[in-house]
Length: 267
Image: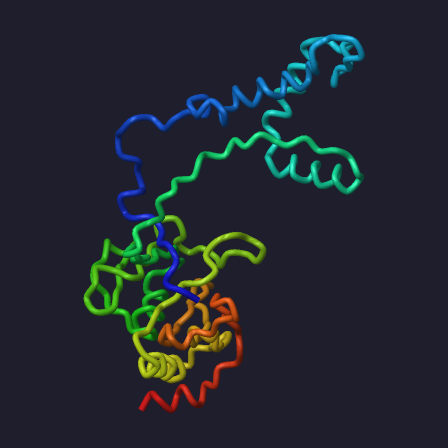
């Protein structure tokens, strides 16, 4: 559900333009830098200051070099490692010290409410095969080409809503299951009649559906493009009709969409 997800790279992303070098890890803020984390781990290894009853966290009989090596190794441990250890210690009834918050401070201001997701840029194996779906079946109009490696398509004359390229994917295979990436691209239609017309185009082309759902806030069709990318075609109900719970929060659901009733509106 929702509008199209973020797009990919442009033709100008192939080479990085000249400019200042990227900041190094050591140039990060002091709280979150590797050097600062190393210092905290080394202090932990040394243990509390000596005194009556004081007990070091690291046997002092061990050489100083081994303590430093341990601190370096702990510095590079991913944060998920410490979360797993904390969960195990909590389950065993052990006291877990709070980890310092090294995440950057969040800004209070939200993104401008007029911001929209403008386009999606997809890596495809074959431009002409992808055009056979996005242009010929879905109906987007071709706006511009970059040779035989990229093409830009849109609805209503916009510069592009969907772009296709083979810069890094020519002849490539579908992404394997169990990997991260795009879940689906969602195209929002202006009315139920327009969504019905899209369904008719799919049926006329013999393109298979993977699902059809009524989410309360929207009605949606699900399918895949020739490169295995998930595609959602949907229309929104008026906001006044969106289902809500007793507290006024959205209560979206997933129910079977009556395709026969939808198709009847195609005319």
